Length: 417
Image (cartoon, rainbow, N blue to C red; front, side, top):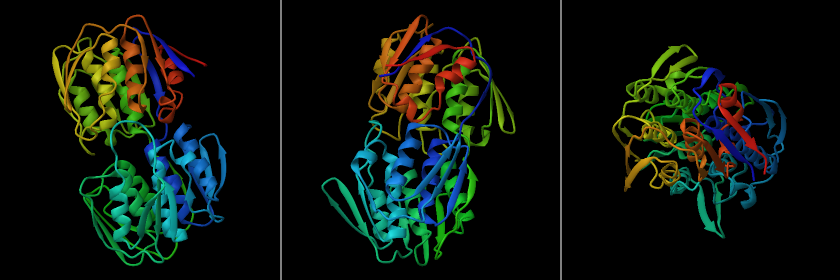
């Protein structure tokens, strides 16, 4: 099994390009199931989750062509309504095929999904939404079975905001009869990106990016050619890396408007951030100030940046408090950071971090995707050698992260297992 070795203590300097967003690419690739003909997607990141999605779409009968960051998908031959366990278990986002399959084939059989162990992410909201559209839902032998001779528009209210739930219902509703209204919809940029793609395919969606999305069903959609938006979480990770190492990084190919909460909190720590259209320069401060953070659904501070920000607070001056309100089990990385000398106390969904002068390198183990990224950042600021094991989590969401950091001056390498 591969691992990453880091010799810490090197300020990061230079320019880095941000890859396409995994969380935007996954539902957009799945949306190809809704139309016949060749769809072309560019700026697609080279990640394990993308590979898993492509394998799943191929299993369902879609034809796939891939070259570098371009993926072409033709679902004209869609002939299989079952998403099997051996593919779906690899990532929770596989549930996104449920809505499109019911919309196109009138039925779907999808295994209950797997993915990172960061707490319960129930799919009951997906199922309730599809039921409101007229689908019958059964659960048997670890599979969801959904059927609908004809989906019909309805009003759907989510008790809690759900990104994949919003995306799933959007993709089902575009081919339903009549009008669907999603209330308490997720507002993330990835929702807007999917809406833009569906509208380009011929859908009629209004309100994406707000808590109320209105969808007027159409009879059919057409294929499209689109580019995937930049990955705001990757950008935020590199921004924090610059601040933590007292570095000077310029990030290109990013979307600063998607990172307002991160930019605000990072500025309060003393980092100097300069924004220029699709580029950002992050200049770290000699003295990192402690800042409290509370994770919230977009446009609040993203839960996917919590672990990385905790590393920064671990070497900040003073006491900081991080409150996690999105997932109930997302402090698993704390024990590994403490092995590296971090002073962190957890009580419920709150972590209190007393900054230390410096972390020290140690063997650590990744437990989920964003925890993996936090351990990389900790290794970059720590004295000595850090060895990160189980980095297959990292490969699910960061494209060649060790190569990108190495180009910025980090002493980092991947060791093949």
